[in-house]
Figure 1 (spheres, rainbow, N blue to C red):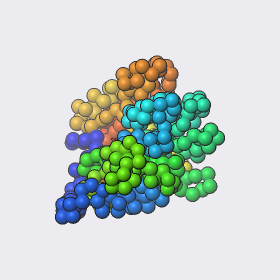
Figure 2: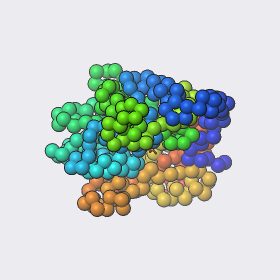
Figure 3: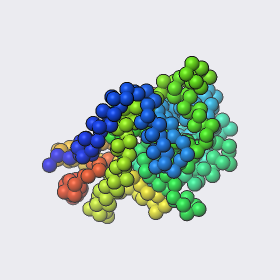
Figure 4: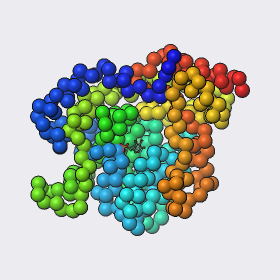
Length: 374
Ligand SMILES: *Cc1c(COP(=O)(O)O)cnc(C)c1O
């Protein structure tokens, strides 16, 4: 048996005729830039999140960058980001000229630690970017509390968490991305909701920020020929929006399928010494973008999985503060011990919608056999 780390083909096979039809519609209209499907997808995506507004942009990275730009964040400012995430979270801050200030992560959820944020706050802190890593929402109630106390804005990096939900202290459930000032999503093909190319979205309930985002993504335009400020070419393609409208209708089904796979993994791999399974708190709805487990004996497991033709990927082997790109930012090994340990032990097992039961069983068997051999 051969099992890829993710299988987009299984997802697309079922909906290929609808995707072709969506493409034909765009071809016929020829509205390739900010066409009808962009506005329609923005409405539909905002509704899915329970947010008032959404602005389609060119990628998840640009979503984060434009959200920071919309707040006027730039040189001299600091933005707190987790030391353990996809590097684009930090890059978006660097693009503005502001300083990314790293915070350690929580040992169980791998999300930014509340204590880490408290330690990182300074008079220059303008924003916090919690990441809902692997599809598991961060501790938003606590983070919003810290932010409110310090006059700090919150931009959620929900690039891995389309459809994830959090139970707020009031008891109501809210979508990841719809709690902070803005929520940023990526439609990179392998994300829970992915296009057939790059794309991104910023959702917000703030009408002014939304207006600013629409202008910034489209050359700073306020009308066809009038550019209010130095803007960017960072629009979501109509073609991608058309594909994403088709795929959005399946998001719940795909997320449910991911949760079923996660539950099966947990059942088959539970209680094994030297193996830590994902932690899922009761006040969140995880969407398992990634099924990440921890092994002390990671390299042995990786070679066994590879030999058995099972795709296993490390998200992420190097914490951001130790990346060469940030070599000159004054951080060193030992600054964020939890992030550094997790980087050495974490491993993503295959996870994708419609993963078959015997595929999950084969992965679990391979791991168990390897650990038993000791
Ligand atoms: C994918 C991802 C991004 C960047 O999204 P792109 O669309 O690839 O630019 C940012 N943050 C996180 C956590 C991601 O997983």
